[in-house]
Image (cartoon, rainbow, N blue to C red; front, side, top):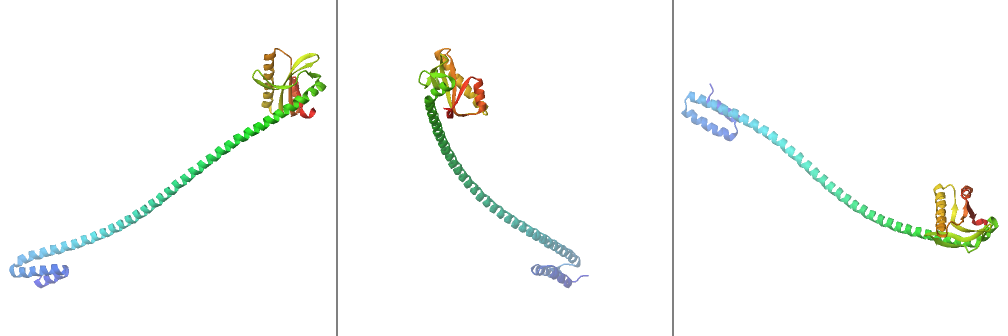
Length: 259
């Protein structure tokens, strides 16, 4: 049978000092006032309290463990949030640099477009000047032909020019070389075109030359009636192939080095 002394020793071992002190006072009071049966009941109560205290301590230990894990998780979450915020700042900086680069590209494109526009304007001017130079050369070549053709045609084809060769507009067509002549005692009209070079290897160009000449012949015949027309092409150089094609159409080819 347990004695009061044993019970006190157990209380001191199991409970904290303050709780043990209170329980010891209770034991002393009970020891003085209760019977053995009542004391046994008290022991059961004390035992239950001890078990409850033990379970409470274990629960507290588990709570502390969970709290520790929670603190760790919160710390990790805080660190992850910190890294996320840092990454967002980096992305914001990258976006800012991208926007700046886009602005620079837009400015560069604008400058490029302005330069292209300037080049295009210069190219148009150059084409205009080249076209003007080509036209000047063509006119100079035609002016020379007005002086040289009469003698050349007479000596090589028996064609005698009766009126001065001129540049004329007939039926809305500009005719480079136009004039009246006689061949074998018969009046004929001279209709000629000047080209710097004639090459049969440029098939489309050949047809364009022949078609252009025929359009001008038609304009003369519409103006003067069904007159005989001598077709003439003057050039600095005509390939043999082109000369052959022209001859088959009854067109006289005159190269500048021949007069």
